[in-house]
Image 1 (cartoon, rainbow, N blue to C red):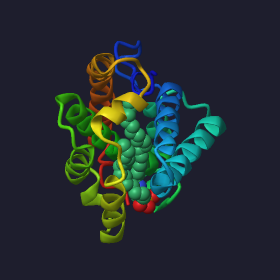
Image 2: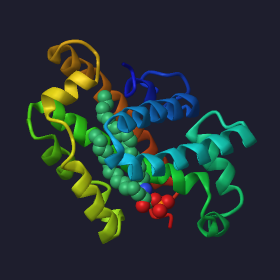
Image 3: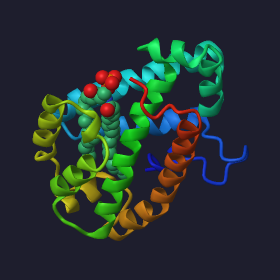
Length: 197
Ligand SMILES: CCCCCCCC/C=C\CCCCCCCC(=O)N[C@@H](COP(=O)(O)O)[C@H](O)/C=C/CCCCCCCCCCCCC
C-alpha cells in the first residue's frame, strides 16, 4: 500500500518540484481508500474526485508536468483573471493542499497511538480545513468522522501487514507528505495564491 508515498517527490529531481502525475495518482489512491470506508464519506470523496478530475483535465489539455508549471501557466493570464475563474487549477490545488495538511496531521495522530480516530480526525480537521468550510460542511464532516473505524481496525484496513508494519509505513510516508505540503505552501505564498476564492 503506497498511497501516501506516491504523493510525494521526496528526493525527486527538479529542485523541489511537485510532479503532477504522482501527486494525482496519490490522491486517486487516497480516494479509493476513503470510498472503501463506506457511503457516509461519499460527499467527501465525490468532492475530491471532482477536484482530481478537474486537474487531470488541465494536465491533459496543457501537458503540465508539475504543480509549478500549472501555476506559471495560469499566472501568465494575470492575477485578476486567475481570481475570476472558478475552474482554475490553482484554486483546485489550493483545496487539495489544505486537505493534505489535514492528512499530515491525521496520520501523525494515528502514528502517535491515540485510539480514537474520530477525535484525531476532528482535531486535524479543526486545525486545517475547517476554517475554510461553511458551518453546514463542518457539521456534516464532524458527523461523518464519528463513523470512522477504531485505530486498530484502521491500521488493519490499510492492508500493509501487522500494526507495527502499518505504523512503520506511516513513519516513512509522513515526511513525503510534509515535503509536498511545504513546497506547495512556499509556491502559493510566493505568488500570493493562498486566499484564492
Ligand atoms: C494510509 C492512508 C490512510 C488515510 C486515508 C485518508 C483518506 C482521505 C482521502 C481523501 C481526503 C478527502 C479530501 C477532501 C478534499 C476537500 C477539499 C475541500 O475543502 N472542498 C470544499 C471546498 O471546495 P469548493 O467549494 O471551494 O470547490 C468542499 O466544500 C468540501 C466538501 C466536502 C467536505 C470535505 C471535508 C473534508 C474532511 C477531510 C477528509 C476526512 C476523511 C476521513 C477519512 C479517514
